[in-house]
Image (cartoon, rainbow, N blue to C red):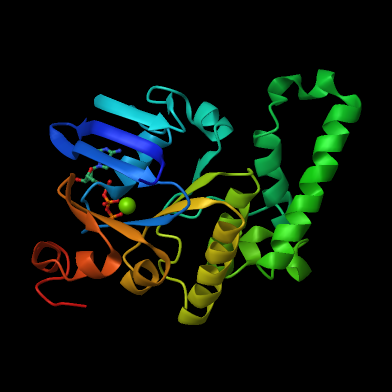
Length: 256
Ligand SMILES: Nc1ncnc2c1ncn2[C@@H]1O[C@H](COP(=O)(O)OP(=O)(O)OP(=O)(O)O)[C@@H](O)[C@H]1O
Ligand SMILES: [Mg+2]
């Protein structure tokens, strides 16, 4: 049996009487890219919010690499190397691309408000390492030439790409991507898929929410399907998209 990196049991989250995540139980296998699909409003982002500490769940348990993390702050969960991105683009538009990347490193430096008094060589060493990693990642995602331009001047697709790069700045072990390719052109989507596969082969696991089923089919070894806050089915991408319940609930009765 494959080892599980994330074990979720009976996770529940309601908003004003609407149960967005309803008794969700699953295990994320180690060393894999897992997909999460489901109709609009089925609870995918809310599930990510609960796993990453953005929202407080009403009940259940979440174990990450064997540690119970439910109730921990997002920063603490990020320190455990679980990093998530948001459906909406979250960048600093007035900062350059390289500075957007460095901000992530600074946020994860652990120096916090002690930064000024910590001062000296430890901070400088961390900053130098962050710049090296930022340059390397920007080269990988082909934004290096643009690194001194403001992020807000980039195209929508380039900003989505930057968001991916920023997630990788935090030295993640597990990345939750919420709709990483929504609204991105097909050529760039293909490049993004190659980036994800390359990072995955370097040892990073991914849990990806996408409505782009081609991406899910191409990247994921396991897919979970959420419907009205509940896991309707899980399995191989082929099995899930051909499941009559998925076709009915998500694909409007039309097979892929
Ligand atoms: N902060 C919030 N306050 C109130 N209700 C919320 C909040 N966040 C989500 N919901 C509700 O929870 C349910 C699940 O929403 P969620 O955003 O998780 O769905 P989703 O599967 O990510 O949808 P989409 O594919 O459109 O992104 C919806 O009914 C939504 O209106
Ligand atoms: Mg969502």
